[in-house]
Amino acid sequence: MAMRICSFLPSATEIVCALGLTESLAGITFECDYPPEARAKEAVVNTRLSQATGAGEIDRQVSEFMARGESLYQIDVDMLERVAPDLIITQDLCRVCAASPGDLTEALGHLALQPQVLTLNPNRLAEVWEDILTVGKSTYRAREAEALTASLERRVMEVEQAVSRVSKRPRVACLEWLDPPFVAGHWVPEMIAKAGGEDVLGRVAEPGFRTEWAKVYEARPEIIVVAPCGYHLEQTVEEFRGMKFPAGWETVPAVSSGRVFAVDASSYFSRPGPRLATGVEILAQIFHPGLIRVDLPPASLAPLA
Image (cartoon, one colour):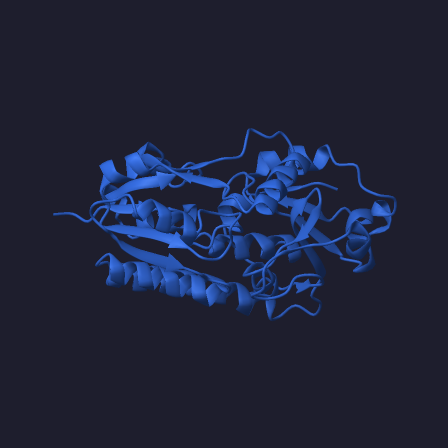
């Protein structure tokens, strides 16, 4: 009998499908949109946030839920019971990004049959690749996982080798939210370094954090990467166009030189999965145009200023 897998986070859905287990995927979250064939699966995790139209409103709702000690997510226990998974893949990294272990523990209390639970908690690229291997071992796809991680590591290494020849690394600020501004963390500062940039705000392997625009200006970044967590490119461009930046924005080197870029963060930066390798390639193209020869996916980046 084929294994029945429930993914409680989009990155796990991508990993499972990349290992050739799309048919075994029995349940997903409302955010699981890649690969496209995964969208047909039953959603067992939904959001409790109301439909919001801007970053400021989303931040307000999230802050209110956090202040009340409430989860942002709702697990559909009835659907989970019907799906009857053998394996649930979840995370313990971010209460905002996906359902928490506490949410899952409560849901499991309602199930007659207890599935295996695999919890992922990566903070660096190497840990993301390790998680792929872990998922492979847990799903009897160890060989496929080894081949996939070897391919991803090779792609990132090729970028590192190419940028090792550059004489100057640009000063980079990567923002994972605009209203209010948040600095990207976890694996993103490492991605910036591997792509040949110097992250002037982010902290490797540490969570992203809220900052002030004055501190962004003071850092004098030569390139700004706008990568709102969970946003695709079109949403990011729209959000940026509606922003009113405090005085001094035009004096930031990245702005005055026209080197502010939007990226598809949801696909290539926010999710700790296989497509982070593409994110490194995107950054290398932004920092050192033409240095590496790769075909970037459509709608993966766009100049903003």
